Length: 350
Image 1 (spheres, rainbow, N blue to C red):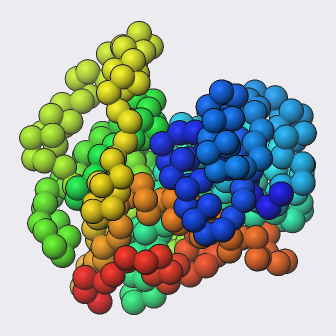
Image 2: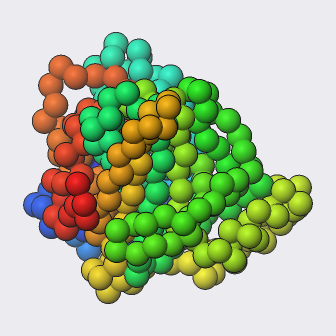
Image 3: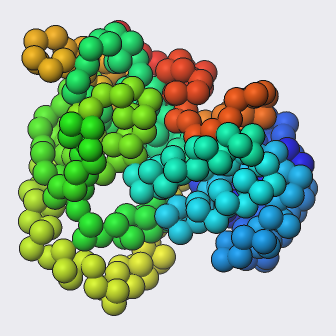
């Protein structure tokens, strides 16, 4: 009973299970809907469990004896806290694939309890936020006196999964976030936009509330952080007007209608897109005088496939850890070279 994958029947969860089996692992799979979990378990001849997350004692019963719990059930703002609380009671390491700032900040508060109970708490072991966390730490190593950090990413040849879209719907109307002078500040979504050279392609990009607003600060100590994603200039201009409709987007009825649309229209990238798609990651660090700057770029496999590979790889690494406990970001615990332990990750310049 080494690894339990919760949320195994979602799009990314299935990819994670597939990667685990390909590596010869026999994880326990779990979720809330017995028919879905049982069917997936039968496909791979795996043990399975069915439980919801509204009752910590029931979670404790379900995960007792498990060494690593990998949570793939988002939005993680609704799933992470109770699972972490249960993991503390069972001395089970907690990992997830979130990119939500609120989840990282919440999980960080469990650091002392994690140390006392001898477990690792590490959200964000997928594309959110391993590549960018590693990029931040590469840049910090090259410019130790860095005070400003820009991170950016761009997907090519992929598509959105249902889980990602559901998390985005959950965040509608909430705006964006940056870190300024060490503090997280709420700003309009896409409050900054500019063209970024991703190495293989130039593209317009805008700021978003990505997990590195929390994690990059934890792992590097850099006080000023912005994270960008590639978008079309048209999308950027439309989102600049979001403040005018935020009250509408926050309406529960409107969100419900959008969620129904997502349920019917988003399933995730095809296997061919997983295989052929790539992601480009960019980073820039500068000092307080803006006199010195370092830029780096690398490419990775398609984002969801990379998430699955990273989640399984890091789960295995955590299983091997001894006498290391507490809250960590991936690059903080394993170093920035972690991302290059995955096949298909290559520098575009260095």
